[in-house]
Length: 310
Image 1: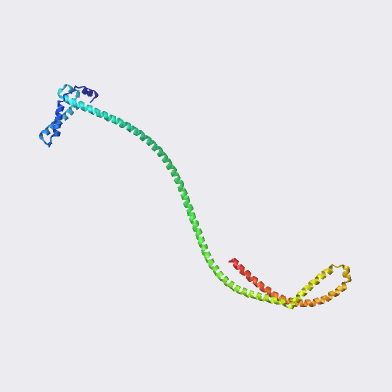
Image 2 (image 1 turned 90 degrees about the vertical axis):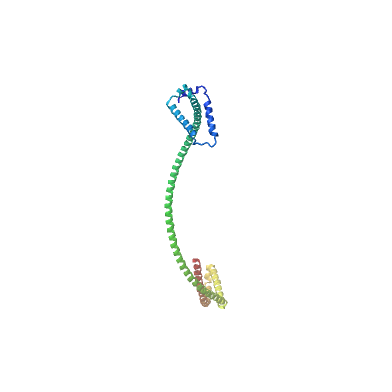
């Protein structure tokens, strides 16, 4: 229906309300009637007639111009109903349009908000893509580092295994050497015990020799030998003094000196023979003492060397 038709309907005079009162009475009767039987033949006929009338009216309104109803008084009530119905529909449409405008504004605001959010999401997405690319590069670098570390780890494991094998071999060698050294140590300990026994014997011999030497010093021959040595030293001093004297004095007294020296030489020869005998005895004792000291020094040195090596 066009706007002109709607305006024409709105300009119609007020119609009689009798038909509407009758309709209301009928609706009240239907609503207030108890135990209304829908299969009542009279009600069925009325409902069928009304349905046919409505269908025919709708068909007529679609096919004909509604303005032609204005000259037909029998259709004033229908025009009135159409007018009221259209006004209500128009109000409903206007309300719907207002609501749709409000919804449209809200939708536009939501669309703008969604656009902003989409822009933010796009920016965030780009940042995320950039971060993902950076992470991907880092992952590649870390993968290379891991591969390198795996290679280094494999090399270190091989090196450690090689060192372990060498250490194990050295350990076995050391164990065998320790066993050999323990065996040698046992032999050396036995030999040291044997040498200690010999050392004790030598110490006893040294004590005996020292005792014999002290007894030899008490011998008169040793005392006489000491006197001879002292006398010899005195004569050497006299000889030194005589050598220092004046050559003239030496020449005048040469004969006396020679005679004295000759006599002295005779005495010295006798003393020398006695001294030789004493020296032989002393040298024999000293040789025994020296030999014993030598053996003692050797065994003590060997013993200290063994202890130092251990």
